[in-house]
Structures are given as structure tokens and as C-alpha cells.
Image (cartoon, rainbow, N blue to C red; front, top):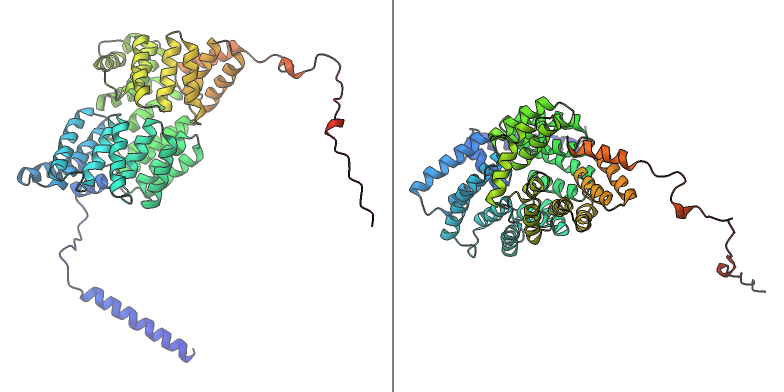
Length: 479
């Protein structure tokens, strides 16, 4: 070893000893806590990061903040945390009864420290609450207010992505998502990216982003959420077996997640395991009365020739009828689709027209188009169906709805193409509509032999005169 090499080795050894000594000798600090975070701390961290939290952790956080605020009523930060915890509790259980409590806590925080004073936690909480209620215009206002005051505050951008997507402004949603990924790459950003890519029809990108979100997940609740979303993406691609595997993995990770239970029921129905699907749907609805799951259960019971159960006093259609009678807008799309097929079609058109005036998303366009078709106005319905399908979202339901309108209007070729698209996208997209799509496709039949009439000339083919298009060559210059 050279002299220089010996000096390097000695210097490195001395540095290692000094660093080790500093670590050993450094006195303990007040914030040094070797204990792992408790339930309320885990939930507070998840809520602050915009990530899912476990039910037991949320309950602990809510109990802790409520007890604290009984003695410290002027703590605006704790009021904002409590409001966001109430909102997460509503999301986990799909229970809107938590929304008024969340609103009251968030407004109390804003009374103590106003939006003009920079109470960003309460402001983003109000935006997220508005989005959860389906009021995307208000959600957009809150998110843009936070962004205007603090453009680099990343918590504004999940609110903006959800609000823009719900309102149908998909370009703005994509821009907000890109900014979010730039400012704070992680679970919340990757999950929003998957949502934006799905809406644009970029399935591979959506799956890849959701897998990145799963890789960034730290807690069982976060991992179960990501697995459940991956299961939904797989089901939409028509991969029912893969979807079932992902939903079951989500339930093993977090058994208290009703979304995964409802997703597993959907996958089982696609695989023809109707009895097991009915069981899971009933269990999921027992935990949270989600209108979409109620509609799917009712249609599954119909396909199994158990319509009496669907319309019983405690059946899914009775639940949907009660929700529709309340006139709420949070689930306007699902309730409108239910009324179009099983209730008052005029009411469906009226409900969905009002929703379209507020939010011009592809989901509203598809539902309104279908309601118009079912009420007898297929021509107007087709215009909305085109708005739903032209953006790029690959939905078997959207393609089926458009095909049935085209068939009713006598456009057999287009109807055939979109029926094939629906069944190719997801062969088991509905126990009722998938079977109807197959019947309609069989009735439409294959196109006639020889292709379209205008392709094959009727007389003897004569070569066209192309002389007018031939440019004479220029003579070569002589030297």
C-alpha cells in the first residue's frame, strides 16, 4: 500500500470512530421517542397525508381530539384535524351521516382562524368534504383558493384533481395531477394519477400508477385501499379472476373495508358464482348502504330469477327507491340509472338533467343519455352517449348504452361495433346487460358479404386519367 493509501485508510477509520462516538455520547432529546406511533398518531398522520386510515385508528383519533377540544376549544388546528377525521370515517363506511359533523368541525376551525389568515388545513378539508358530497363546483373553489394563497402547498392538488374530474374538466385535472406528482410524489399523488389515466382510457398507465401507490403504502389500510383499486381496474379490463385475487388480498390486509367486499361480490358475479356474490353484496350493504352496490345486487337477483327478493320490503330496490325519494344529488348518477330502468323515467331525466347542469362529467353524460333513450328520445340520448364515449374512457356500460341507442335509431353497423366493444372490454360487466348485449349482437347479425355497397364498383373498372397530376421533368442544364 502506498503512503497516500495508508493516509486515506487512517482518516476513514478516525471519521468512523468520531461519528460513532457522537452517536453514543449525544444526550437524549425531548422528542426522541423509541415507541412506535399509537393509533391516534397513525390516523392523524394518514389524514394529514390524504391517505386511508384504519377504522380503529380513526376511532382513537376522534376520541382523542374530542377530549382535547372539550378543554381547549380555541385550538383551530385540532378542529381541522377532527373534521378531516370525521370525513375519513364517512369515506370508509360510505356513511354520509358523518358529513354534518365534519362540516361543523371544519367551520369552527375557520371561525377561529379564517381562510384569509391561511387556515389551509380547514380549507382543504372543506374542499374534500364538498367533493365527497358530489358538490364539485364548491370543491374546486376551495382548492383554487388554497392554491392562490400557497401555490406550493401540495394538499390543495388532490382536492383539485377530484373536483376537476367530477366536474368534467379533464384537462385541468391532468394538469393538477402532474403538479401534485411534482410537489409530493407518494400514495396520494399516484392514486390520483391512476384516476386521471383511467378517465382518459390509458389502462396500462393507470395500473402502473396504482402499483406505484401500492409500493408507497405503509399501513395495512393504505395497502388494502391500493389493492382494492387495482381490483377495480382489473375488473374493468374484463379480468375477473385477477380482480377476485386482488380483492381477496385487500380483505386479508384490512377485513373491515366494505369497498373490497363489494368489489369481490362484483368479481364473483362476473365469474358466474351468483350465490357467493349475493352473500358478499348483502354483507357489504350491511356495513354501508352504498347505492351502487344496491343497484348491482338488485340486477344480480333479477338475473337469478329472484326478482321478489330485489323488490322485497328490505330489498335493494326498496333502498334505492327511498334514496331517490329524498332528492339528494350525492348519488345522482346511480339513482338516475335505477329510475331509468326500474322506476319513473321522467324523474330520471329530470334528476340527471339537473346534475348535468352542475357537472358535465362522462358519467353524468352516459346516465342522462340512457335515461333519455329509456324515455323514448333515443336521438337526444345518443348525443350524450357520444360525449361519454368520445373522451377515451373504456367502459363496457358506456359502449352498451350507446349501441342500444344506435340500434333503436337503425344504425346497425355502429350498434354492432359498440356491442362488440362492450363485450370485448369486459364480457361480464353486468349479469343483466352483458346477456342483453349478447342477444342484441346475435339479432344484429354479421355484416353482409362483400363489404359496404359503395366500396365495390358497379361497372367495369377504368383506370383514371392521372396526366393532370404528372409534372413534366425539367430538362437538365447543359454545361
